[in-house]
Image: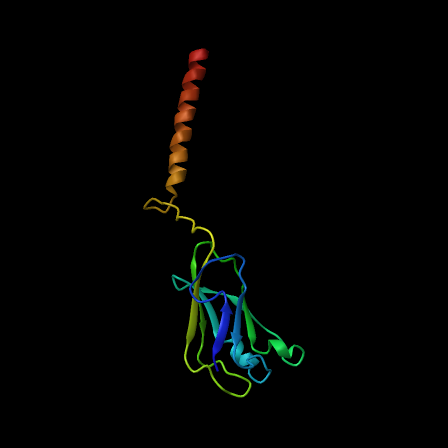
Length: 152
């Protein structure tokens, strides 16, 4: 059994958000005899290794036989723009006839947009922008107080 295609494809950049990942296999992987095991064969993770929870969607091959080789992965949390993600398919996934994938398969993609830059913080964990705003507020209050006293 093989992974015949995917959307997004491996290495694709500028994948529009929100994304739903479509995987097409060479054989029936959604049959009730293998469905429960196969649902556990998929993971989605960010470049830093954080596992993203996903819903694995498989059609009923009796009701929709034309979709018996299709698996959809829907992230259960918002993916970040401009970020690399990896879909991993375990080698244990198998077809209705018992043919396994045999080796781990992965595909990588990068979401569209730019990755927001991290907030700069002090050694105590406070955002530096808050400190700058605080200093600015003290200066404005000081000037205002000086002007108020001068005009009295």
